Length: 395
Ligand SMILES: *Cc1c(COP(=O)(O)O)cnc(C)c1O
Image (cartoon, rainbow, N blue to C red; front, side, top):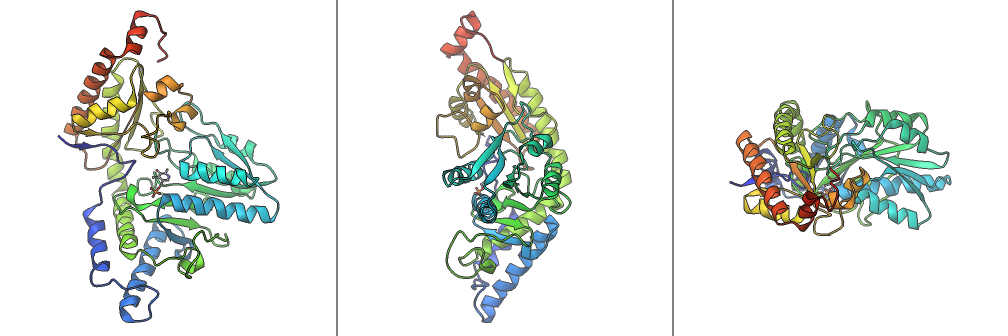
């Protein structure tokens, strides 16, 4: 069996998305800035893709800028808000401790420039309260940036309420919606969102393409110097095939969002129930308020890395946290942010589903995880100390 359960890291492209891309690599390969017909065909496709994505977000086409992905969109949103803020002496930014590194590292860079950053704590359930945001906003706050849904533990944040507070206090509000876009319905106007980042490869589109929504009137800082593409907000010849693939994948994902969510949450809950039977295990993040396809656990007395390798041997492709932090031995900042101590955070497992997963695969995975955890504990000196009472159980 080969069971792919790492859809928060990236997804397989849908057939619809691939088919939407092919003509723009073949017959309609023009540069949209060219004045001849081949170029103009590409330009018409670009205009249509922008309109289609805008419609699904509830905004205007001119409020969408295409980027190379979620990371670039996050960087551009935050840097732009900082440049707008500093013009009027506002150099304070509010965010959370469990953002993606595309946000956290951009904030680090601004901090070195003299910005003050407040990172809100997230509670054990992995949810930020709107009151925390309200209390953190100051007169010199230029931006609040809070992710829509967390990439490791899948918890969904009260975005509309946070947006409302930012509106009332006249502070720009950005959300990294890379995990939510295409999975949850988002209406930027209704949810009081000023800027939003999304990335195609998280919803069965191609890698290396994303979009930044920025409400009209917000002046975006161009991070890449060059030609005047994207109304001067993002230089470089547009990746038309990828943009077409993204538009098709986004529409397909949203057309099926309700049925996918029903299917995925049923599989998710089955997986959670099965894995919860393992003694000294704990679900990370709120059980209800989470993405339909996210399962995240910590196990006492084991190492996440060995767990992943043994699951891989059994054909189960999982992750310990985010793809970006695996490979480093530091425990995930997200798990530390929800209060897991180092020892526990090391024993983490993230399983993220797609519509293609079946019930049979879920049952196989539950057994595989049980067997592997049991085996690793049987050879673990830490586990021996826990069982003999030399060390105390935490979970
Ligand atoms: C994947 C991810 C990103 C980065 O998106 P890329 O398109 O891979 O650059 C940013 N934020 C979150 C929450 C993500 O899951």
